[in-house]
Image (cartoon, rainbow, N blue to C red):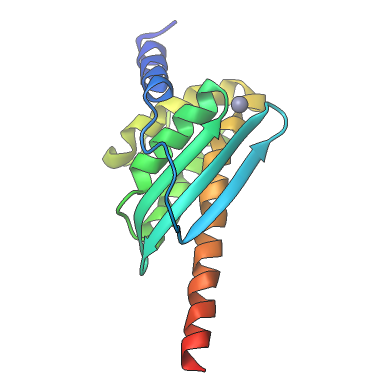
Length: 156
Ligand code: ZN
């Protein structure tokens, strides 16, 4: 096992044992559930938007180490960022996970996420890593639809 593999494993275990932004949000902008039946991962994602910014994100999850670590890293990478930036981050992460080529370097603020590229060796586990990110996109969409709905109501 190479040094990089060891570092990657340490990062993943750290996020697995101490998941960041774990919990619930009362009265969130969106609450969405994600399931990965292949592995049995389940998570609930709470999202609080302030205009176009992710003001708060919380996750409660019952999943494997990869799923839990990925969700924890995702919450850190998107908290306080604009939706536009977050969509770019999601794209960069997904591109990394789907890439068949060698080492991928992500922007500095996404450094921890590079640890998950080791998962590409296990195609079944890629879904575990992607679940929190796909759930986040659903949450953003649902929150934005709600915002639009409210504006229409205000106009009337
Ligand atoms: Zn899993």
